[in-house]
Length: 72
Image (cartoon, rainbow, N blue to C red; front, top):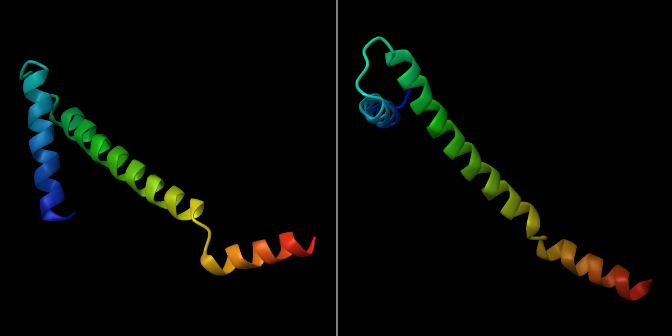
């Protein structure tokens, strides 16, 4: 795991632990919750990048589509 990502997850897990009253014995749950947050955020970012790439037609395809539309 990337050291920077691990540090971010550790810090977020600590925030979760403190927000839930510093109850001991739930470190695994806090770590997994923090990992889930980062995974969800990165997945959403990746999905939006892919979606934006799909929305933009390539210039070559656009010309072909226009040519076919005129011919039809």
